[in-house]
Structure formats: structure tokens, C-alpha cells
Amino acid sequence: MLILAMPGNTALANELATHMAMRPGTAAADVMAHRFPDGETLVRIDAPVQGRTVVLACTLDHPDDKTLPLLFAADAARELGATQVGLVAPYLAYMRQDHRFHPGEAVSSRSFARLLSASFDFLVTVDPHLHRWRNLDEIYTLRSRVVPAAPAIAAWVRDNVARPLLVGPDSESAQWVAEVARLAQAPWTVMAKTRRGDRDVSVVLDAPADAAGRTPVLVDDIISTGHTLIAAAQALQEAGLGQPLCIGVHALFDDAAHQRMRAAGIARVLTCDCVAHATNAIAVAPSLAAAVAAMAGTG
Ligand code: R5P
Image (cartoon, rainbow, N blue to C red; front, side, top):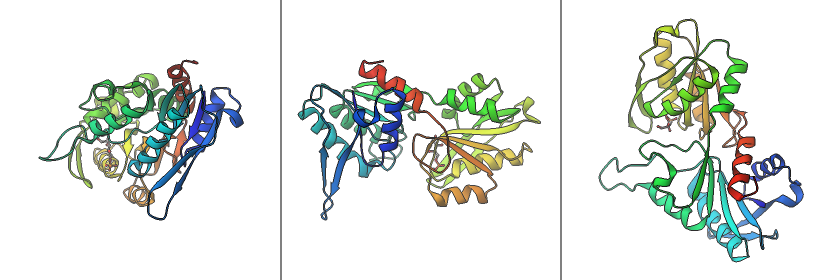
């Protein structure tokens, strides 16, 4: 198997190769991408792919810039003789647009699934935003495997928080929060969220009876503008439960959002390393590597 890193994903590819006990120099290589002055991209694979399973490593935050070069690289690998071409994308983009919320909108999750399914044989990702789609097979026609971040998050919570109360900011977060709570043997609850716009979110908290004296730990799959966690943190403080610790699986937020969260009284935010970010503190690479090996038929 050869793991090929798309630009910006060298660390991910090397880490996966290391966890698969391969020699990094031979098992992981970079895909070269050159951006022409006119904005088009040339992609080149210098590594030998003939007769090998090729896995492209590319986390898909900021997907609009990344997707075309990724599809070009997948086609190149296949044309150059790869026996199968897989994708490891710790963050899978566009899953939240799983419905036509307003007349005329594109259901981007379905279109994006069709694009990736046409170019790859298999996909490995971490906790995609499954809400109205129950699983990836509803929209993806390739083989897929979902790696849950809950075990790694629960281990971190067990090691670092004495009496946690796991809290999700909305109904769909129950799937992650309940599992983290089960593994960390802690109580949990989820809030009811209403979103009126990109930056206009409100939540309602129904605090459980055994919440007093516990440290609230907010868990969400995605942190983008930070407004969801800010609203949730404020609800916890208004309920007298104190400042929460915030954990996100996919760190899509920028410095401005991070500052906004701090200014709103969120003292600590930490994330899984699905998207490289200063707040990364929880590693999912070992579980990802096992899933990639299994999908490639070498695990
Ligand atoms: C959506 O339902 C997701 O689970 C997150 O709650 C959402 O993407 C967070 O976005 P933001 O940080 O912009 O509020």
C-alpha cells in the first residue's frame, strides 16, 4: 500500500504509515500540486503506484480548494496502474447540507458524495455529520468506514476530568455525547438548538438532576464560527453549572472564532487532530490507521 499525501496532509500520511508499521520513506509520499497563474492546478504523482493500493490522505476542511486536485490525483493514480484507490479524509465536508432547507438550494452532501464515489473505491473518515442521512451508504456508492472519535475523547475525559457531565449542544450530537458518556461512565444530556443563520444560534438546556457539582464538558462534532458552543456555554452558566470545557472533533474554526469563544468565557477548547489546529489534543490516527488497513485489505 502507498499512502499519498495531498498538499498540507504530509503529517497525516506519515502518521498513518507509522501506525501501520511501514517505513515512512517508502510507504508515504507527497502528491505534487502546482497552481498556475491562471488558477488551474497541475497534479503529479512521482511515487510508483503501478500494482499497488493507493490511499490519498486529504482532510476536507476548505473543500472547494482541495477537491479538484484530489479528484485529479485519484484519476492519475488509477491511470498509472493503481489496483484500487482509497481516500482517508478525517474530516468529510458538506455533510451538513443534507436537506433543501430553502427552496432552490442544492443538497450538497448528495452531490459531493456522487463526486467522490465516482473517483474512489473506498473512503475512511471520522464521525461524519450524520443527521438526516442515517449512514454514508445512503449517498455514497463506494465502500466506506466511519472511525468514531468517542473512544479517544472518552479516554481523555477519564484521564483529565474528575466528575464530568457530558453535554451536547443539539439533538444530533446525542450520537457522540452518549457514547463518550457511556465510555467515561458519566451522566449526559443534550440541548435543543435553534439556528436562524450562520451566526445566530440559541439553545435550551434541560439540566439533569445529578448535574450539580460536576464539570460540564461540551462535545460537538464541528466547531466552525463557535456560536453553537458559545450559546451552549452561556446556557450552562445561566443554569449555575459553571464554565464548561469544550471538545470538538473537527476544528474548522479560525483564530477570530477562537478569540470570540474565549471572550465569551470559554476557558478551554480542545479538539481531535482530524483537522490540524492549535487546539488539537486528542489523537485519532491510531484508529484511522487500523481502519485504512482493513479497507485496503491489509489489516
Ligand atoms: C451542526 O449541527 C454541527 O454539529 C455544529 O454544531 C455546527 O457546525 C457548529 O457550527 P458553529 O461553530 O458555526 O456554530
